[in-house]
Amino acid sequence: MKERRKRLEVDWKVFPCAVILLMIFVNPCIGGEDPAKFPSKPITMIIQWSPGGSTDLSGRKMADLASKILEQPIVVENEPGGGGVIGTTAIANAAPDGYTIGTIQYSATTLIPHLRSVPYKTKEDFAWIMQYSEYIFPFCVQSASPWKTFKEFIEEARRNPGKLSYATQGPLTAQHILLEQIFSSEKVKLNHVPVGGALEVVQQLLGGHIAAGMSADLLSHVRSGKLRGLAIQGEKRFELFPDIPTFSEIGYKAESPLWMAVCAPKGVDPRIIKKLFDAFKQAQESSSFKELCATLYLRPVFRDSESLKAMVIRDFDSQKVILKELGFAKP
Image 1: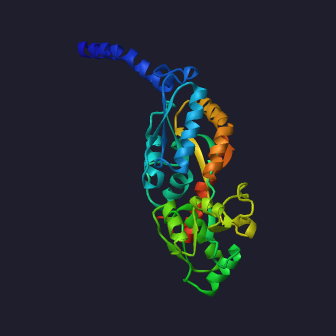
Image 2: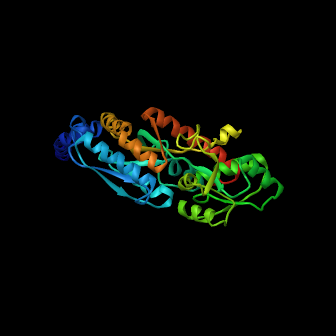
Image 3: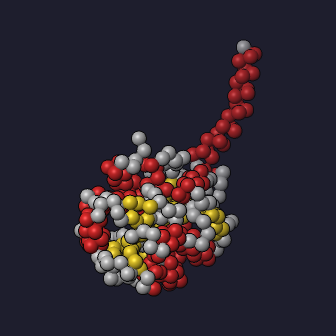
């Protein structure tokens, strides 16, 4: 009887602590910051690519503009590697308090999870804030080449199977997968030259080592007249290069994601997500951001949190089917 009374006394001493812990678990705001006061300290924004590229520069611009609206610094941290997987993992694993967010792109979320194992779940591990831009990828040949249209290029490939070569920014990138869809539908065989990034695509094409290339960095050389754009990725023509038709205009229904967005780890209070959304939306609408996009050959595109989430899920599912059909998907 004494032992039972002693156990009960201990249990009652522990009970208040258990209640407090339960309240914190059910309502994290009790143990954390009031969302109404967010942000009260600097925010970290992870960028999954190295400094200096279009993803980095546009993300930094968004961070700078949004920080002025939120009245707190947004500190950029570059965490490149693994095709964006390292930085994306860091976002997914961050504390869900709104103080760690990140830029995020299609490659690490809608393509790579179907090619190899990644330590996050695209559909479950992120709170989507907004889309702010999309990439523009042209398919180009040298200006001195005989091909004036993409269809002419395809006919050359049909006459000479396996003779023409092309490069994208890397094997199993969205551009590589897009072109393999198109070449498969045309039943033509080309050689894909694996390169290590956009700069090498430019070097290979300008040097005459490949017949064609597809990379965002080719647009400046189209502007200078050294290259000819035969087709462009996207739903509509790029305003800065209105003479280049889209693949869909030419008649191809191949799918490929292009988006660039801001997200947070899952579990962030919706009121905090709304504050971040409002700040980044104002940043994206600014004239200075649009001017930077024109310089980087990016297209400003806005989608709110729900529309972005729906697009990511759609792209994730569609790319799974496409990669399986092409034989690229992991077993």
